[in-house]
Amino acid sequence: MSFITNFRAIIEGDASLNSMITGGIRFGHLQEDFDISKTWIAWDMKISEQVNCMKGNNAYEVYEIPITATATDTIILNNICERVRDYLNNITTSNFINIRFVSETKITTLSRQVNVYQNSMSFEAIYI
Image (cartoon, rainbow, N blue to C red):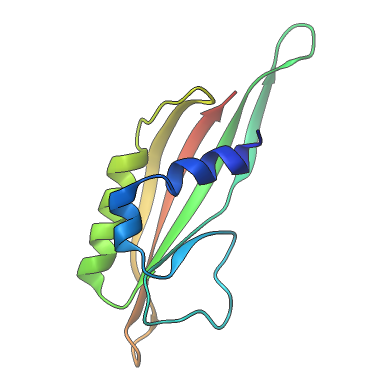
């Protein structure tokens, strides 16, 4: 399976996180006309390193994973981000040697008129 398929299964596989997300967990970016009354997670990825074995086979890849949470309430937003950090940080599976939390940017206001806020988090994953 691909990195995207495997990571999607991980991030969508946590029941407590899913119970907090009323709009959905999306790969890429939210649509321009997303429902601002719901809570959302959007994630993306880019490969930052590829390590090969001596014979040229792929040993592992390192991915950067930006994750953005969107909500209308800062307390709910912080709870979502805390759950994402707690869930993903240092998780190990058969394909992921490690996923680690790198950084977070707190509360960016998209619109004060309608109280829409975003937090951006960054993770790094070693993938085989």
